[in-house]
Amino acid sequence: MTVSSVPGSGAGSGAATVATLSGRFLLRGVSLLGGSATDVLLEAGRIAEIGTRVDAPGAELVDAAGLVALPGLVDLHTHLREPGREDAETVDSGTRAAALGGFTAVHAMANTDPVADTAGVVEQVWRLGREAGHCDVAPVGAVTVGLAGQRLAELGAMADSAARVRVFSDDGKCVSDPLLMRRALEYVKAFDGVVAQHAEEPRLTEGSQMNEGVESARLGLTGWPAVAEEAIIARDALLAGHVGSRLHVCHVSTAGSVEIIRWAKSKGWAVTAEVTPHHLVLTDELVDGYDPVFKVNPPLRTAADVEALRAGLADGTIDCVATDHAPHALEDKETEWAAARPGMLGLQTALSVAFDAMHGRVADDALWPLLAERMSGAPARIGRLHDHGRALEVGAPATLTLVDPAAKWTVSGAALASRSRNTPYAGRRLPVTVRATFLRGRPTVLDGAVV
Image (cartoon, rainbow, N blue to C red):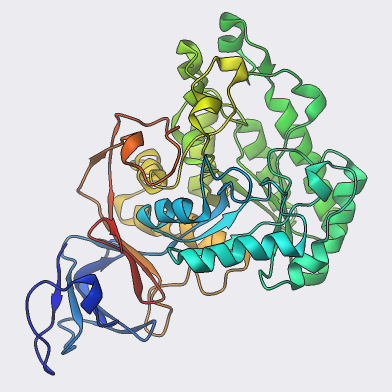
């Protein structure tokens, strides 16, 4: 991919530098969602024109032949660690990784230090995102004070704050008290919010180290049973249906969970769900070497679960892919299995892994539209980010990512933008390379590098 100036109106020729970019970009020969090649003019933060051989004197010409344009990706589940654990990640480093992965918006989870359970903390995170400028940062507010599960946090104050919080979650911990969960679901209805539940019945997972099954028995590790997830999803779906509120299920990981969510949707209840890239491709057999990079919550499940998750994503039972990007400092990961903290990096590898998981499951001409919906349209709607996830059409925000479907790349933890290195894909060769990301017409990534 090259960027140069379109001749005319006094414009020069040759490669354009960041310092001389005009703010007008003509994407020449790009494929919208895998369709026929066309030209797309980005101007004044919008898609100004789409057509064959668009004439735009003075614009920056982006040679996009062979590239696919997608709406900017949106992540509903990102851990940016700031404030409190800047040794593992900051808003700046995390959103750099996001932009390089094709994301134009991320939802920053609440389990920071201090916890994002007040208007002051969510506004701090929101402002840090604006200062970094790599992508939009939508803070997620905690459901309960201090994630302690005892009393509701300041949900209304966070919703009315400058951050305009619409997603609330105690992720990392389950809102296990059914009465408290009901009250939260009732409360968020007032401002069209959603409660995103970490589905884990804590009494069933005490001391758990991996998925409960054949592998845990063979390795002698305490198991995390699928029913611990499925019981909470069933309970909360019933609660959401009862009060008429929106429920979002975080990181679905079992075949049984997919069936329960399918049933809840058949009832017409406002239940949505996400799956992580790693749950689409990795299984509990990887725990065999006791490498803590494969320790995650919920744990990696069986091959049968992976297959059910892929099927659920394909048919829409699972609404979206969310990274659960969870950076950790070296001392928290490079230790014995039992002491290691759960979590994996995900932002820069998400699109490649999702493509790899779904390629061959749907028709080739349907794959890019499917990924655009599951990684942009649906998460933007769930998070109420109205300027993201839009169709690529004239008048829409110029918020998009350009990917090379033919270019493979090898993952290296040291080469990722995150401050942490805990990627489960180190050394793997993955399909699809992000070449450029635009946020309201402004490039955040060009030719694979942060602008």
